[in-house]
Picture 1 (cartoon, rainbow, N blue to C red):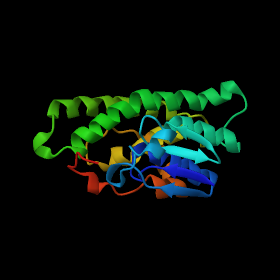
Picture 2 (cartoon, rainbow, N blue to C red):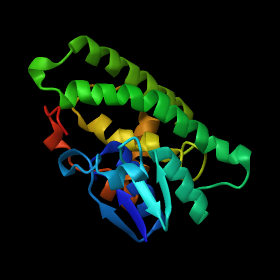
Picture 3 (cartoon, rainbow, N blue to C red):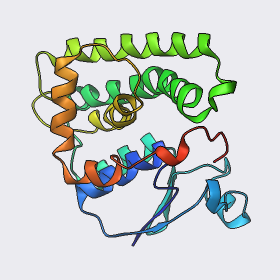
Length: 212
C-alpha cells in the first residue's frame, strides 16, 4: 500500500495527490504538518531528515520532495513517463522551471497577499511578485498558443506543478493578465476529476493566517 504524509491543503502535497488520482493508485493518506504536527517525530524524521511534507512510502521505498515523488511514481507505474530521454525532457524542463521560477514568485505572492494580515502586508513586495507572476503566465500563454498541454498534445507531468498554481493564482481576487491560452489550459485541467478533487480546494481558511 502506498502511504502519503502531508496536509491536503499544502501546495506540494496537492501535486502528489493529483498524480496519485490520475494514476488511480490505492493509498493511505496520513495528515501531517501544520495543525496536524508530527514532522519532528523521530519516526517521521527517519523517513525525511528535513522534516517536511510530502513524503511517500511505496512498499518500503521512501521518497521525499514533491517533484522527485512525481517522477518516481510516473516511472514506477509507466504512465506520463516517456522512455525517450528527449521526449521526457519536454516535461522535465517545465517541472524544473515551475519549481525554480514560477512557484518561488507565486508563493511569495500568496503569502504576501493572502496569508498575511492586511495591516502587515508589504505592498511593494506584493506589487513586485504580482508583476513577476504576470510575466510567468504570459510566457506560459505564449508557449500554450501552439499546444493544448505544456509538453504537447497530451497531459503529462509537466502540467502538474504549473497547473497546481493556477487555482490559487486566479482565485485570490488579484488583477491578472489576459492570457487566453492559459485560461483554456486551466479549463482543460479543471475537467480532470483528480484536479478538481485534490487541487480545487477552498483556501479561505488560510486568509490572513500566517501560522499553519
